[in-house]
Image (tube, rainbow, N blue to C red; front, side, top):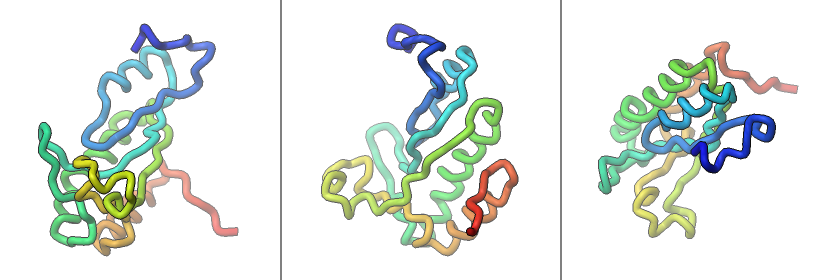
Length: 139
């Protein structure tokens, strides 16, 4: 990454995508350069090597498994790295319903819409009640 880095005077944030797991190299890089991290896109992908597993939150059993296998580690990564992770953007989408992703093996079994699972909705809201997360104000 250092070869392509334009310099601290030109970079405000470091960003990466969180699909399967945290990018430890990027976190180390951000600390080295004293830059905040933005997880620019995050969605639950269940992957082991080249195999992809069901991450369709419309199935409540799958949703509970995905919560423990993806969401909990995701929020733990944010907690463990709160000195540098300052923002994230969650992709709340039914991936295979979108033509550009329908044949992509990574997203064929990913419906990451929080609202389709009562369990995930409850857990999500409870997690985001933590004062660490900025809440939208009703105006």
